[in-house]
Image (cartoon, rainbow, N blue to C red; front, top):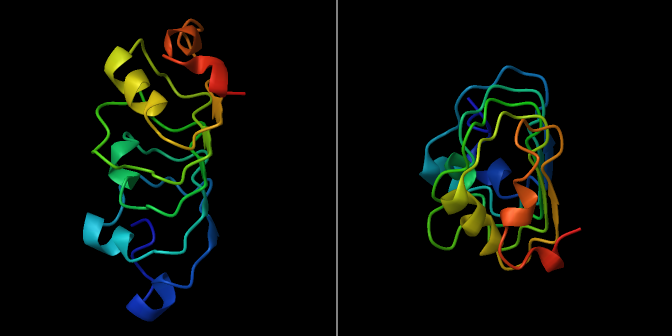
Length: 135
């Protein structure tokens, strides 16, 4: 289970976590994730996560790395999700054309870098509204 092993005291002190390559398929429930109030950098590369929305309770994240997971759609992000997120790496998943999910990403207030490389549908990025703010 992602991040579920830290105690309540420890969870608020975690700033960065590299959990790449652990075959993670699911994450801890939202109340547990929400306790990671200082987690700013999370690397979940090369796992088996099916959803971006399940990580939304991690409100302090600035950098989220999710390349090579099992993401096929972005889905609808909860209102207020990822308020501090600046860098999002979704490379080498199997994302399909997902206008709702792309509009959700465009609504992230601080997102400046979005990596969608290695997808079957290279036309994803031009569909982002106001894509001029992305690198």
